[in-house]
Image 1 (cartoon, rainbow, N blue to C red):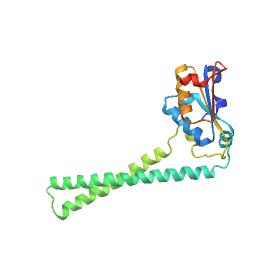
Image 2: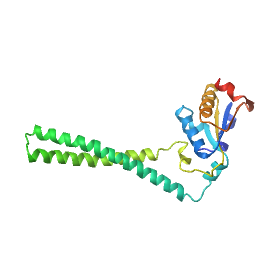
Image 3: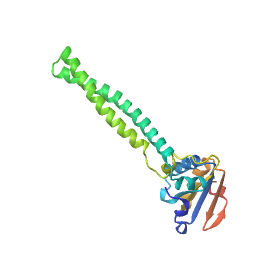
Image 4: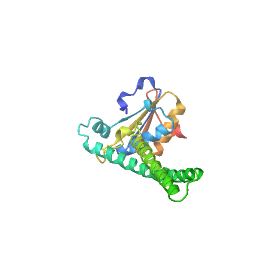
Length: 197
């Protein structure tokens, strides 16, 4: 995560800035910018909520949220993996038993072993995938678990050279419902509505 102060403002010709009511809304806007193809190196955040989260020393509450989210996601995907690969393993075991000419107790034993092996593999793969998803690191995820103080604004600032990228950034930021927006071209204010018209 880059603070707005750390962005290379001197290299940018267009700056789009949007102020949001809180840190959560600002991180959602940052994620939307990333999905829209705006280079995260050109996006930063500023404001009281950002400074408080950036310099926070006591991270116990945030770390607890991260752990809970990771356990919840990993547990859910592990369960899905058990169900999907367990059933697939049971069917594969039954087919293998039939191919080997097994019947009765032996066929059911083969199917049970296939279910057990499929469930074990599914639990491990599901937990790994769920954990990776929970810890997906992008520019907005630094503050994903930091709420900040209620009512503390956060500003998302985008510096780009290309006017089309500035238009795209302004459109995305405006769609996320900012309190206010402003655009600068070569340091001069311009009406941001003209960018998205």
